[in-house]
Length: 284
Length: 266
Image (cartoon, rainbow over all chains, first blue to last red):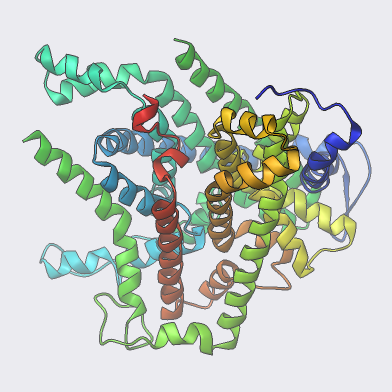
């Protein structure tokens, strides 16, 4: 079928509804948020139209710097851990029989769709002193008394990796399932062990996919909002938490909007970068 | 040896993913109102409480209603857009497409904050229907991706044959496109439904102060301490997700939907 340009005005009919909905309920709120980030806050939790940079100037505070650097470090840690775990896993997954693959995919999607609230609750239970893993260690005689492992940085990290892992697998899945199986066969025929073949053939072949996935998971982890609150202490709060806190509880919408605009720029920049890296691989 | 190690690694991952769910399932059948694992006694009372307790039942109803309506809205927005992109050659329409992919790429807090400001300015803040529209837009990406994939899988010769025999756009849509694309529409709806059911931050920032969906209710209840009812709800959520994705896998091609090439594409 030859696709042509729409000729009559009526041809545009079908796209009018989606375009209007997306403009009104996504583009307009988005634009409004950018505008509010330049507004002036007035006492009593309101704001008035203005054009000031003071909301952005608050980025220079030590407090903001601390939250920002913690968010970035946390997201980077999550990205590295998730990809390190998910890459070999996805490789093995794509080599399984189709039926087994489908079972795994259903399981992964079920975990991925779980609410952050439920993941937080589940890990808090698992790491608690009453119902947690440490009880098992006590039972085995490895520990004297059950202790609580949450809240803490470790708990936050484990919780977010748990949430990000299925996402990472699904981002890597297309690239790995399209990997030419003869590459590995050639390496094996030439005498390399499976492990050596994996590291010297599979990993380099998908270098760009790995970098692109690292970036995507980083952005995913930046969006994490509830787990730092449920599994961490206030010093483990991320930028996402700070944004909602300012908007809802400190009634400082302009500052929240300024931080959100900053988060958008960082995310879009990184996503653009990952697309660029991904494209390079397809061209090669 | 190597096959054994591979299996060990896969089992370890399965354990990591399943462990919190197992503990939660254990807690949910505790006889006493306490969080202990292994469970002491056996009771399904906490599951009954989801429907007998007013607060939990209302939250469950609200969540199901919001998820159904917003998934339907997401499909209604995504389908004509995907059809238009497939039918016509219109470069600027790609901008609308990009707009439809945006909410999912950005951290959710951004959409949530944008909508909070929007509904407040428009004077509708806190009204129940606003969360339906908000979720419908936020999750539009999912049906958009699945339906676009469905359109790209339609054999062009089928459409040409229909057109040669005198079918107009409407007839082609009804007799060729819709039957072929139905599984992709259903999957898109199902993805949006499950994710809406689990979504927290947008629900919280749009209607959090006037209406409780299940995730919001769980988070609010966590402040007053744990109850096994939460664990029962968590189990329910996992079961619903597994059921929905299981059905998609049963009636559709899950690996293909997730971007793998099937054997005949190679």
